[in-house]
Image 1 (cartoon, rainbow, N blue to C red):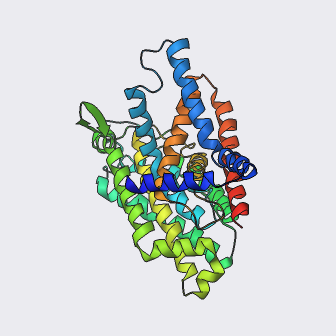
Image 2: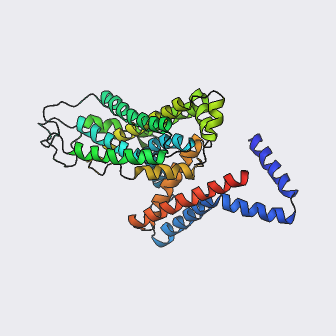
Image 3: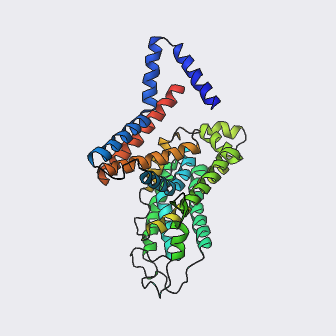
Length: 365
């Protein structure tokens, strides 16, 4: 608290020392650099007013239940964002994240279907449901391998992550379509999940009378692990160094290839676990599983201050970005905005956020 007070005091003293022209520039820079946050606050205020005075809703936009629902959705979206965030710090991006998650969803669902006696449309009739822990390890392992493949292509052949992950995305979609026709599935959605699987993911415990799903706990564990990796390990330090200046990092002894491959591998493992969670949350998994999920993850990271210029970004910023994006999504739903228009708005948000980030980068430079 004392540090915050001191920081505010110092900023106020600096502002008072400015002349009239510099003060105008200060406010212009402030509003431009924080445009996303200002717009979000105005949107929240408007939707809250709209929900109370226009819709006469019993549970307004900022009601306790609505806030809890937003936090639950944020927890589910966090895994993907944590993985994408590290790749953006490396000045890259990952367009294959959603498809990796989607393939993990389908595999998880197919391995954890009820026995044939309980579900006649079982994909593999003669196979008993796998142990849940084994399924988690399996989907995280093959997802990590896909991530490692992406990282290897980027680091070894000096290919841009956009191109590599776009190619991987297309290949994975082909694998998804093939997998959907395997066994006795015939392209139908994979459903009929075991009760143990659904309970493991969607089961709840109570805090102060509020039901909290288990996947929220898993999101917090993932958050703690990634915070530690980013802030306390050599890999985290090397990741920031490579993102800030790859050539300088290489000269200073950082193994650029190892760092790049490990960051992509770590991201892949997170996508795999995200797929395991989402398969149970969705319940019925089709070929569209994970489609465009990477766009929300990228948007959340950019909103949270993870810079595409590399070397900048914090775990706390990713969390903030995920929550903010969920608030925007729920707010648009309250206003009755169609899903089609929501995609346009989210695209505009990404564009504005990247433009603001680039402006900050040019100003510093």
